Structures are given as structure tokens and as C-alpha cells.
Amino acid sequence: MKYIPVTPPERERMLRSIGVRAVDDLFRDIPEEVRLRGPLDLPPALPDPDLLAHVRGLAGRNADCDRLTCFLGAGAYDHFVPSTVPHLALKPEFLTAYTPYQAELMQGELQALWEYQSLMCELTAMDVANASMYDGASATGEAAHMAADLTRRTRVLVSTAVHPEYRQVLRTYTSHLRIAVEDLPAQNGVTPPEAAERALGDDVAALIIQSPNFFGCLEDGQALAKIAHTRGALLVVAIADPISLGLVRPPGEYDADIVTGEGQALGNALNFGGPYLGMIATRESFVRRLPGRLAGRTVDTEGRPGYVLTLQTREQHIRRAKATSNICTNEALNALIAAVYLSTLGRRGIQDVAELNARKAHYARERIAALPGYRLAFAAPAFNEFVVRCPLPPEEINRRLLGDQILGGLPLGRFYPDLRDGWLVCVTETRTRAEIDRLVGCLEALQ
Image (cartoon, rainbow, N blue to C red; front, side, top):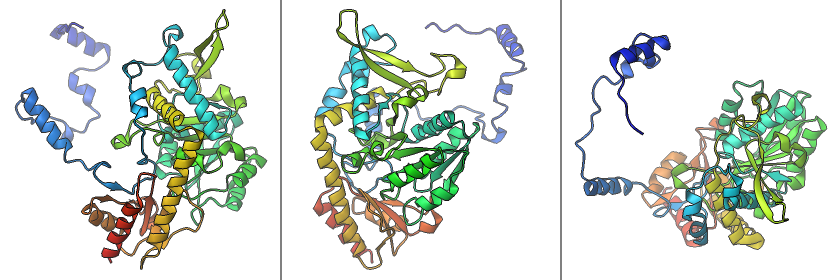
């Protein structure tokens, strides 16, 4: 692209055409005190070798899970990724591919997305899944919008045991829609069915829960689904760690209507927070209201299998009034990684990984709860996360553990004032018995 300078008269005409007098008027919304009034305070440019050495030095200051023993979860999980996953998923032909608009040229990527969707349906026990969401939080916001469209109702109930940041994103998504989001307080770490029954009215579009929830506890999804359906509402289940579905009942088996979740745990590395993979699956009867894209399998005129984008419900593809979402890109590479990961493990493998998570977490749970001053916050069954109440501020515990190369759990006080002494600990299959015992020993030494 060639740069063509703009002459002063041309600039004046451009400014007049948009109704301003000077370039500074374009930045009127930026407070005067924070505007840059001089050149950037940057050091002189470096030669490439020196710059690379400098950046490596900065990167070396990061503390990551390769060097720390990680007990932090809360929506992003340190799972083992088999070497087959990056070897296959990061092939150049997948790295360079974008949205497969031209089916005749993109059969490989379309098949990969179709395989991913099929695996998501099997994992969640739902009828149909799409291949185009951003992350678990925004997928949950999309599910609320979808439920409101399907039921023609205006209220959404969300359990406070759902990830707090999912709930924040949910409110952002619905802030300019005719949807009122209301919290349903959790009790003893779970969503009480009797409270849901009292709160559900004829104007409620959906009840949103998470299982395993933010506290690591398993919800009574079947009871909550029955209560929601009795009042004509939909049950939305958000899943932060889909590895759990290798061991616990999938939402489709207890009559959930929409399943959302975060697919990072399925072979995607932590990556310092992203990009991640949004999951959404639903009933076949709701497929027309599913946001994003749906890859399908068909046959050509000679009966050979072929893959296409069967459904595209964003505003660029259909009449704006009929669009279900403004999702305009996808996480196809992350979805491909999840498909390769699940295919590598297989049905038995995902069960084994889930069982390792549960067994190791319960061992850590019992060891920590036996320490003087520590006690479990909730008695409900859990998967691989649990909350303990601590004799010291959890922030102080984490600070001191970091000196022992241990990344501690999440302090819950920032989200739940009544859990200021609450510490959310996660144990995945990557943690060894020796590492768990070392954590317990360090906690003992803090007394």
C-alpha cells in the first residue's frame, strides 16, 4: 500500500465534512490532563540482536507454570498437553487458515470444525454445538440472549456460584438489551433448588448455573432443570473445566437446554490468559437461534462427502433483524486443538484424566483440612477445586508460598466479602503426591 500525504487544504475539507474545526476536536473526549503533549519517552533504537536479548531478559522475569508448582485454577487450568496436540494442530496449513468462506478450498478446516462440533456434542450430551465463540464468559452472555429470544422473556437468574467474571461479562452483554440479570444467592457452596423455585417467575427466560461451580462444588442439575422447566424457563449450564465431563454427568443427561463453557482445558495451554475457546451446545430444536457458525457434512453430486458452513447467523450473512449475534470471528485454531486433544485421549483417556483430577484434589483437600486453623468451607461434593478457610489472609499465604516456587490458590475476598479468609485451591493431573505434600508442609511452616 502506497502512502499518499494529505495536503493542508485537503485536510481542512475533510475536517469540515465531518463537522469539526481541528484535529484536536477529534480527541475532545480524552481528558486534557492525560493527553500526550510531547514525543514518547523512549530510549534510542537497538540493533536486532540487542533488542532480542533485552526482550528475552524481560520474559525471563515472568513466573510461569513451567517453573512454579501451580495450585491456581478458577477458570484457567494447568493440564498436561500430549505432544501430539501441538504437532498436529499447529501445522502451517491450520495456522494460516481463516474463516472458511470458500468451502471448495477449505475442506480440511471445515472437516476439523465438524469433528470438533461432534466431539463437543458427545462430551456435553447435547444435540448440536457450534464452532465459533470467543471464551466461556462471552458464550454464557450469548446463551442468555439466546434464551431470551427463544422464550420471549426478559429476566435471567444467575447463581452466585457461577464464575464472578462470567457474571460480569453477562451483565455487559445484556446491559443494552431488554434483559434484566438477577443474582440467585448460593448457599453452602451450591445453588439451592428451593430458592430457585421461589425466584423463578413467568417472566424468567433462563436459570444459569455452573457445575462444577466456581467453588468446585457439583450442583443438583437435574432438580434445577425440573424447576426451571416447570416455569417455562431454560436451564443454562456453564462449565469452566470440561475435563470434569469425563467423570460427572454431562448436562444433556439432566435435561439442560444450553451448555456453555471454556475449552482452554482441552489441550490449550494457559498462554498467560488467552486466546481461549468458547463452547456452546444446545438442543436441535434451538439450532436456528444458535450464534456463530455451524459446520455441516453433506455429499456432492457424486455421493462423495463434503463439508460446508451450514448455518451462519451473524449480521454479515443474513438480514440484520434476523441475526442472532454479532460474533464476527472465531477461535478455530483453539477448537482444532481441542479436537486433536480429545481424539488423542479418547473416551477412556478423558475418563482417566478426570479421575486423576478428582483423586488428587481430594487427597489435597483432606491433607489441608487436617492442618490446624484450616477447614473446608463447603461440604458439597467437588471435582478438582475446593475452598478452604485459612488462619492467615490468603493473599499473605500466596506471597509466602511464591518464595517456595508455589503458585497458590485464589483469594476469594475480592469476589465474596463473606469469604475473605476463603482460598480456592485447584489440583489437576499434573500435580504429584510429592508436590501436594510439599504444599502441605509449607502451609504447616507458616503457622
